[in-house]
Amino acid sequence: MLNASGESFAKIILIGEHAVVYGQPAIALPVKTIRLTATITPRTDGQQLITSTFYRGSLQAAATSAFAGIAHLLRALLTFFGARQQGFDLKITSALPPERGMGSSAATATAVVRAMYQAFATPLAHATLLRWTAISEKLLHGNPSGLDAATTSATRPQWFVRNQAPHAIAFPTNGSLVIADTGIPGQTKAAVAAVASRLQQAPATNQPRLAAIGQAVRQAALALAADDLVKLGAQLNTAQTQLAALGVSTPALDRLIQAARTAGALGAKLTGSGLGGCMIALATDHTAAETIAQALTQAGATAVWQYDFVQSEEQQ
Image (cartoon, rainbow, N blue to C red; front, top):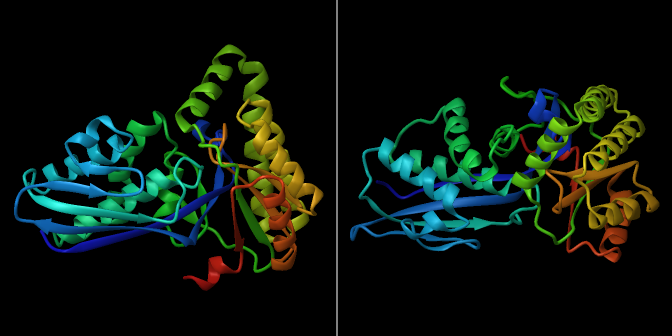
């Protein structure tokens, strides 16, 4: 084993949450200014130790912790490389808040896989990376779409349909997103299960809601290609209406969404699984985004980030 490191970053689902689990498209973007790094240092004493903001201790003890998904992934990787007894220190440094719909678990898995492959001097194809990250994501989230892993390991905004290869799409050079944290952990597994239960109990009511989200995603893609921020904002609002009807919005999310719209947002919605986590607001430009960010802070957001669409092109 060699000294090694792997990097990943936050993701934001622009539009398509929950519907993407059922075959509808989604659009997501990597936010490369919010980063996560995994660093591996070999040990000669056989100890396998992990240091992070969300778990600190041995790999063995992590099996019964919130770090269980990544621990399972690590054991699988060590088995693959024939190094079950190899000692190491794994340090994870992250600017991503966990359980906020920003892809923290997928970003962690992505960085860990990249670091492990580097530690064993093995080339890593992107498709292989996605297969590995699915191991921990399935354990954590039950029935994940794969969108988080695809986006936290990407370099461009992604058009995503489940069971199809994601592909990069261009974003306009105008417009900004404001991302705001409710301060309440999202509940991905519970939210996915809740939508599944609603579909099972009332398919005639809820299937059209998912279809409406899918149609909003398609219209959003056209709006992006045409640099039509007003149309894009309208699609974000449409998606939020359907997500709320599916029961995954919350009073805290609703309060921030309304505050953003009052402050001039062209559109606003939750991002990620909902039942907590973050929301996003679309602004015409960086200055308008600053005004919206201030309003969100005053409305109770515990953290706020700004992301200008032009960054999607600048950071290639």
